[in-house]
Image 1 (cartoon, rainbow, N blue to C red):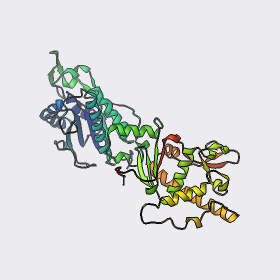
Image 2 (cartoon, rainbow, N blue to C red):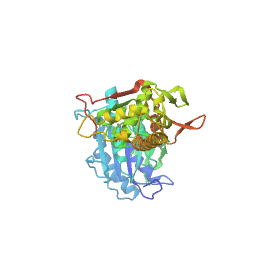
Image 3 (cartoon, one colour):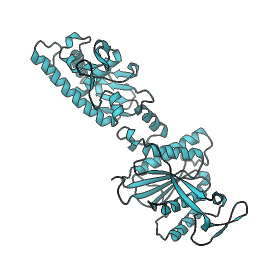
Image 4 (cartoon, one colour):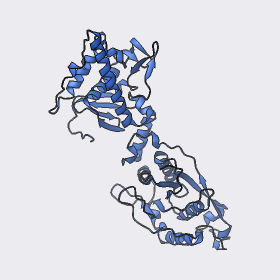
Length: 425
């Protein structure tokens, strides 16, 4: 589905404080806006314990009156949170902020409360964004500034092209100080403001102002949006993808396992893993032969396909080292390395052997590239980890070089998995 479809399942998310009126004000503004009027099927109010009661019976009554005002039959009955995402069922959901033990947090008064709310609203937005048929509208009109900020950041993390971030503007602003006001009316409805003045609800106008925001969802590694993490972890991983923080790479030889910071963890086939470990060792140890800017003894840390044709000219011998790594990947378990030494040789003496080395390494490099690109999802991240979408060519001769754009100190290679550490499946 895409943003050009005619009928989304509209989902309104509101960060709520002491004024539940922001819910009816937002619904009214969305219903009246041009050229894209809409009625949310699902309303999700994200509140603290201190304001929970305000989002009870008075809000339900106001929503029923709003249905009459708009001439609609919306299914805004209150219901519990969905057991598992995505859940397209309509209704009104009041999501209350709790601590790690399930105790209700009455207000955001500490760094811990703010962190907890960031995690909370991020998971709500992430959950609703898992429904490909939904369009999310997140209103920043209610609650503390901390709540609005984290609501907006959650939309940046998980918002899709069709999703919207908005703010409700009430004209004139005098109605914001009127606790009896819920939405503008067609007929006269006198209301008493906080200072004692009498206002008429039909004299009010409400505008839903769209707020442009940066959508970062496509920069998240593949599958990350579907994982339940805390807000700080999403931000940390996104910063790593964008190059704002260093990346680390850990390889476990005996398991053919690759760990990239805390962004992703996966295994590779033996031939591809051995080549990837060779690339990692070449970068970590600064071995001579090639680099991202050239080929020759002055360039270090990268490899070329030609280096496998004449491997004895380099220290260490890349083919010899590759065979050793490949054999070591079979050290744990019942499998055996097989006949790889019959396919490649550390000391080719004729054109057939050199051609065989080149052919096999190009094949394994191609498969490794595809595997890494599939896991890493984003082109910039794949390039940093040795799998660019386009080959890196250097002058003279436009020779192809390949390697890792990582700090050598950020590369860790383990023969075995440390005891006590759990492996991701």
